[in-house]
Length: 228
Image (cartoon, rainbow, N blue to C red; front, side):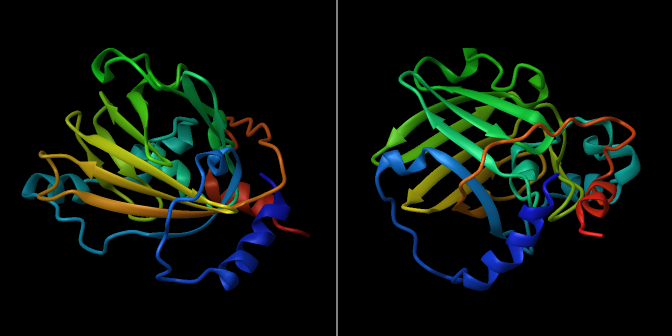
């Protein structure tokens, strides 16, 4: 965990303009390293009765995979405050690397979604992804995720069934990036649930997270990173 990034986040928040309409810049703008500075999470996710029951059974010590060095979802990874993410555009695929939990994701740009390889080889529970370009925006569809919990941070205990399908839309414009994630899950939600994540370009490199079971507590990592 990088202490400098933790100190940078509040500064970025002060210059973020809420409600600004986002427009896609050039596709090449997507390529780079990005630091999270804000998100919009629905107050009412539209849970079904089964979803409310699942949420009520959530126990962080039992159900938060972070304590086992097992990231629960890309939505959870993206709004972790300080570890940056890296996007690299390749000819036939896109690499999306998350410093958090050392998650390295490969998204092919052709083929069939149902037969695509697992997007993170070390974490097949995160499903299969297929990408495409919609104009200047990158769209990534993901299926075949393991049932469990979608979020353990912004809205702890939001459930996820094996029928969930997500659509991520990456929209870059210069040094700003917005990722709009639409979650569709007929088991636990009555409507599509949308989460939006905002990032700013940073001049840094992805570092090794090096998660261990003993040090996997998020609070402990934050405490360790704070200046003494």
